[in-house]
Amino acid sequence: MLDVIILKAASSIDFSKLKFNPENLTNGNDMKIKKIWLISFSPTRTSKSVIDALASGMSDIPRESLDLTYPDHVSDVEFAEDELVIIGAPVYAGRVAPLAAERMAAIRGKNTPAIIVVTYGNRDFEDALVELRDIAEKADLNPLAACTFIGEHSFSGPDTPIAVSRPDAVDLAVAKEFGVKIINKLTTIEDVAAAPRAHVPGNTPYKEAMGSLPFSPTVIESDCTQCEACLPTCPTGAISLKSQIEVDVDACIFCCACIKNCPEGAIIIDAAPLKEKRQWLYENCVERKEPELFL
Image (tube, rainbow, N blue to C red):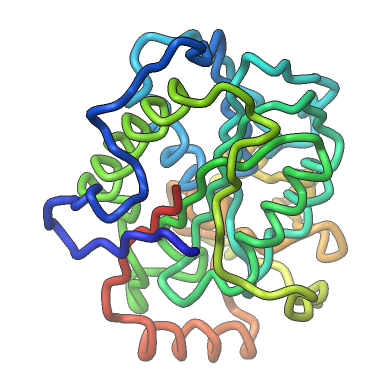
């Protein structure tokens, strides 16, 4: 059975809808979580902000972050049974961002409990949560809880705002409170391997993934001061400064982190097909969507 809360904006959270009794938090064989690992692929930092908020509701358990976003990421880590892994990734066209899936394939658990989190730009997460569940299970992680949150769309801009400033304070409060409920539930589990997995929506086989785009963001040379703020934001190292800032179209995944981090607004979406898609999203994805929680 699917246990889900679809939250209303700025409303209180009715956790009674979950199959979990918060009055019975302990038993004689409580599971003790010794460390929380925060694993993220998050070019615009939306997924990271959500998993950080989740962890903030989990008392004073020690935490360690593993950021898979950048080319110098470290992934050779094995997680133990008495640790908790929170994995966050963005949705690209209804699937886990391909580079996130590639880098997360290298992590390994050991019958380790996990929480899976996807963030999407107010359109739809489609098969991304199912895909992230499968990535986690392949890594010997046991996804006991899951959630989806909304992040500002990578195509959002001044003229076409799409989920601007999401996750916002309401979203992060929801994430923190959900973290409290998850850690309380974990204390009631005697055997992680036998514990029921979170049931999540989505389909297998997954929808067809978006292919590589034959475009990259455009640099307006007259506005660029060559401050190099964009260089370290790129997940693939596609940006370089020679005589001017250049973006390698073959390496670019169009996460738009460079656009959002340029202090001069000198990097823009200029390719006609992407401008049309951005306009469609602006016109059709206006209504605020809310987090969905699965426990």
